Length: 140
Image (tube, rainbow, N blue to C red):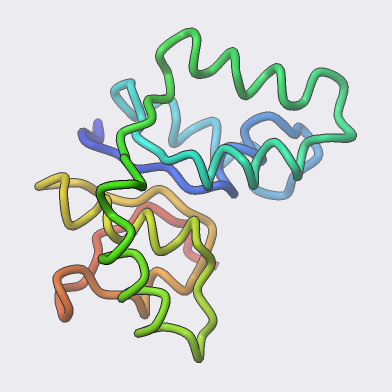
């Protein structure tokens, strides 16, 4: 099955670039089934660059994914401060990261989208207050 309108989280980006990651093969297989571009936000890119900072060309490889149009930043934080703040408040007891709140908000904006993640909290988060967010995530 080919996935359309995929919003990608930090974990799959890092696993895709790290051959030693336990989810590397699974992530590569998911990327192969996904029609580019995958949508994301600056918070995810910041987290991913931080996590790959010790890899050879880690951050540069993430930027190459953007240059090759495999990733596309489709979120304007300035326009979404209030909605993102509401999500951070709603899920403060989980807790929710800024990147996750932005991705939840993106799922509200991009009709028919799925979130590609390794983060099981996306089973708890809801879009539009009570709707389940479709995800692509490992089953374990």
